[in-house]
Amino acid sequence: MTSLEELAEKDRLPREIVAMRVAKELPDGAYVNLGIGIPTLVSSFVPEGRTVYYHSESGILNCGPIAEEGEEDIDLINAGGQYLQSVGGMSFFDSAEAFAMIRGGHVDVTVLGSHQVSATGDLANWMLPQRGVGNVGGAMDLAAGAAGVIVAMEHTDRQGNPKIVEECTFPLTGKGCAYLIVTDLAVIECDGKGLTLLEVAPGWTPEEVQQLTGAKLTISPDVKEFEL
Amino acid sequence: MTSVSDNTSRPGKVFPSAQAALDGLTQGASVLIAGFAGCGIPENLLRGLAETDVGDLTLICQGTWIQESGRFGIADLVASGQVRKIISPMPFYPEDGGPVKSHWESGKLELEIVPQGILAERLRAGGAGIGGVFLPTGSGTRFAEGKETRQFDGRDHFFEVALKADFALLRAKSADTLGNLVYEGAGRNWNPTMAMAARVTVVEVDQVYEPGGLDPESVITQAIFIDRLVLTS
Picture 1: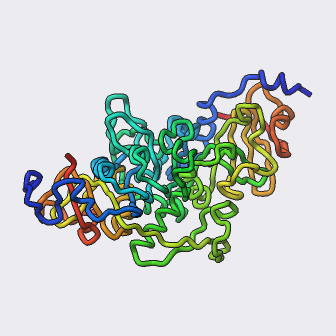
Picture 2: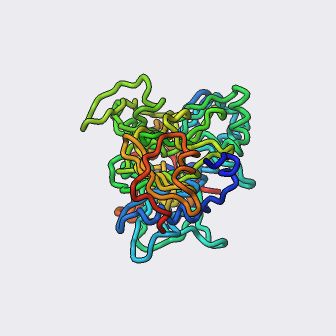
């Protein structure tokens, strides 16, 4: 078994590769909501030939890419407050409609970052208990409403603790809402009962990924290296 | 189109200043404030409110965004000590919380965190004369604790009571003197919902037209919801 000290030193995938792997999961024609962090990067990596429409709870459907410096329009922002380019086919709506689209199941896929994900797909991404307060934003509605949540995050936190755990210890955002977890070490499927390891980062073994995971992983018989 | 922006005789619902338009907003009032991520904030109305000595306010808003130099925001209103409570999905950024963080930490400011979609539906219910709504959001989380629960389509839904306020401070691109409103881009955000959910609505706009100056097909918020207009200075 590799020691934890050795594992901490090993190379992990950059955020862009994690985003690229998530982008592969987005079906052609899907309406997609991207959370803040790694999820925001996903829009840059949608495979050629596929069209994905982005929904932002700021009240824009079919959001354009991030605006170039010097070309910012104060009335075109995404949920993280970044300025967007104007594109054809865009439409605007108010906040209640934005959440009707989410809660009503009209948004097909949501990609969110998270502090923790449990073995049964519970998500805890809105509050670190030591802070005593959190920005829940629209995460809870996204977790409750969309057809499914893909989690895109680092495999461990800054202290090296696993972010994939048996039971979340941080305040929950939603129960059983994650169906896929993509990290800088692995792609893990979540069927609501348990976790299956599908892919590992180059240079990593399934056993090493398990060592840095706080929940039991079933290793798929077809487990392979990250497929981009 | 005829602009009446230089007319000081207060045609229709147009008030001469932010302070005049805030008349009746008194100590202890609840105030809805539109805006999303710093976009579409009624900056002049907030400044006008800060120039009054009205305090003990409860603000209901999407977030309290980072203080930016030259711009006036909710954080500045908190800094002036006029705010007792904020109901919001995004109370502050822990890494850059400014006066909101310091007032909360010292116990001078109460925060009530509400998921964004729940806040939107509570306001919509309030504005539409509905007592409350059952929503699936927050199942299994602290936001569902203690709430009346019913199952629909096999899923737990939780009762969220309607929310209304004394005042709404809003921001639109253009209005006519009757109070019909047109927005720009994401500047629409909370305005249409909040416009329905307050006893007195005050809107800051860039331009005011005579009736007929706005295309009725493009009007997003109807005059019936709007009481007062003030021009962005």
